[in-house]
Image 1 (cartoon, protein in one colour):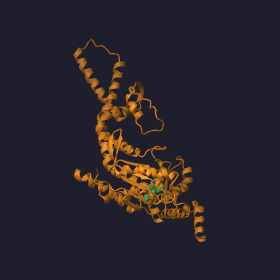
Image 2: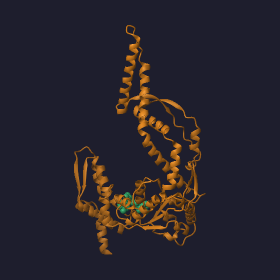
Image 3: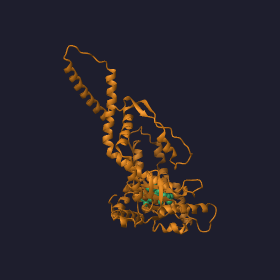
Image 4: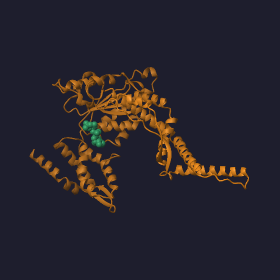
Length: 453
Ligand SMILES: Nc1ncnc2c1ncn2[C@@H]1O[C@H](COP(=O)(O)OP(=O)(O)OP(=O)(O)O)[C@@H](O)[C@H]1O
Ligand SMILES: [Mg+2]
């Protein structure tokens, strides 16, 4: 596991998420604690289970974004699930256990990708050599063999051999350089067995997976490009070089020890005080279904048994209608770290527009660059957009930072439409006046409604 300190984690998160310091700190500390735990002797380690986090805050303020960035940062196996997609076992829907299986799958994919990177160079070398061999065979079999009588037979053979060797090396170089990628060769490829859907809609049973192992894999001679052949062969070579048993083992271990499960929309399965019938019954059922996994249990997957004790759970919800207290007490108790995310105002919006590495204004500029538009926002324009976003959130539904997306979209609609790329590079500067003109209707409506109220 990696070694970032909480401070370093927070400062990495700062590159993408504005404000929400408490939430960032909480997740950073939770992560560091897992690292700290991993350094303890086994006997002490087993006693320490992670403290799960409950993030509470209005929509569009960064809950999901924090979790997503965090997972990327630490390269931990991470899955995000929506609590609402589960309904009680026996009802329609996916059973809660599937989130653990998804985590294991993700974890194994992660390890596999790592291993693939390790063997990639070797696999590519082998693949290129195989392609060369296929091409050489074709050449020798199609060339008529000339017989030479006048010269000594031995020397001829040596010369031919040397020549062939040099040719082979030359050819390999060309294949490696990618110059021949579009050339077509004939090659044996394995036909992917037809996927059979045995139990429609049930992705959790591995029956079709299991069966595909038994189905005969037909080989076929196909004409394919060298680029495609290389892709196939690299995969084939890599799967020969990678010890899949070890990958699975490591995948399960990481899912158990480093896995993070983010349960979004947890408030939607809480039961608002008052009602305890109809759909509420099944919501409470989902909570009860989630409980054992959060408390620690074992789940059998096709990669073996996995313990859920040390998986870090981060739950998030707006909790507009239902309160945290409306969750069943056992579940509340399993999320001891509570962080509230703050409502975003014009000040944060301005920063969100400009600072994050993937800020929307930067993204839009990149996109339009493709069509020869050099887009620039003036300082004042950004401030105005931020102000309007806050106004709209106050007067309309509060959708947090998502408001910025809708505003930017409508602001750039015409420019996006007009840009065709078939003109010389043209600079487009978004000024405050432009923003006001484009968003006139919105601004007027809210500025006036302020006076009326
Ligand atoms: N504090 C922030 N800093 C930077 N970008 C943000 C921030 N908050 C939200 N965003 C951006 O707004 C969008 C929505 O954020 P996110 O998905 O995190 O919302 P959420 O809090 O999970 O809301 P919901 O309750 O609806 O799930 C994302 O594109 C995200 O990048
Ligand atoms: Mg979310």
